[in-house]
Picture (cartoon, rainbow, N blue to C red):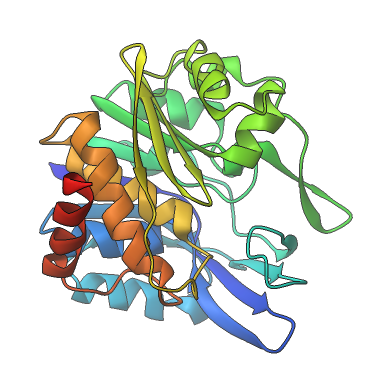
Length: 291
């Protein structure tokens, strides 16, 4: 029995800034399990990737993560283009894609919580989400991997009209302010969160440039993001989801959202996954609790 198990593709990300470009390892599970492992929890991932990218498997195994990887002809490769200094503005191109997941791949995986971290719609089919929901008390899902479709090689969001069959199985739904507006048509983050919760999720976790908001039990809790500088926008949502769900195993939403803000703030200060000491996050958390 794992504490948290992920399902989702590894992504090889080419990040293009106005002044430079670089290739980094990505994917929701890669960012998320760095948090899970450093919090001392037992983590696992079901993923598909090309053999040439197996170094990611080895890195996570060194952290103590149990990796159930299936070799795919290609990995999912993304090109993330940031045309300006505003890191909330970006274009994402899909240059190759790993094989989709099957129910068989998760049949023997048991966990207290599952996190579905897809990159594009179809990667994790509806029947896989249903199978996960049948075995876990918490099912967290990031909406971006279901909003996104591929059009002329570019990832775009089409509103995901057929969302109800999946969202009814979700316990914690992760979105950001832009995605929430696309899904609901609402500029007001709180109104949007309420509308999303009406599809079935008990908790809606929403990130925006200034902080993290969670809607649960008819009310809201919120915490600010307080990075000293922003150098690592990619993986912000994945880090937030992992830290929130990890804390929710033992704490209420009002506490988990503050912890998520603390971890995510530190992650934003550097590119790549969260690799800081948990004691540093504890210090930020305690400061946020006092404000």
